[in-house]
Length: 116
Ligand code: 5GP
Image 1 (tube, protein in one colour):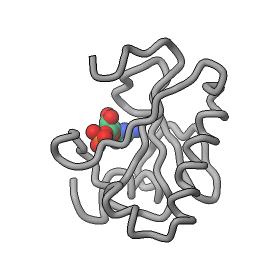
Image 2: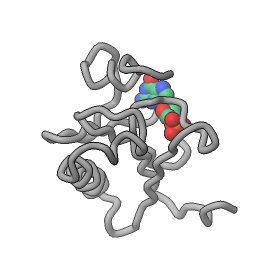
Image 3: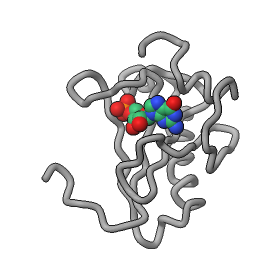
Image 4: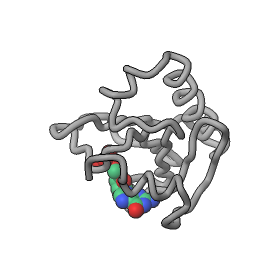
């Protein structure tokens, strides 16, 4: 879905439900509906961008706030000790399906070697 009315815009606006696991001034984190790991959470910045390509045009403080929010969400989920993976699918070849930038946090169990 492209444009400014994606499913994640609607989750942020509380127009459709999501299992929210963490929120602060900068980000909202909620469970992925099709989890690919024991813990699979999506983190979106509250200041929208369609993808990482657009996020880089925002002030650096927005970008760092997003990454700090991802880290805070992972900590809140208890993933720091065991570790976790962060994925930012960007564009068609990466399989991005929702054009509101989002970080996948995957963890809660040993993950396969990336790319294998
Ligand atoms: P992408 O491939 O764009 O990086 O990932 C989009 C993710 O959003 C997918 O993992 C998909 O399962 C998840 N997703 C799609 N629609 C919804 C929804 O309505 N609610 C939630 N919580 N996740 C969704």
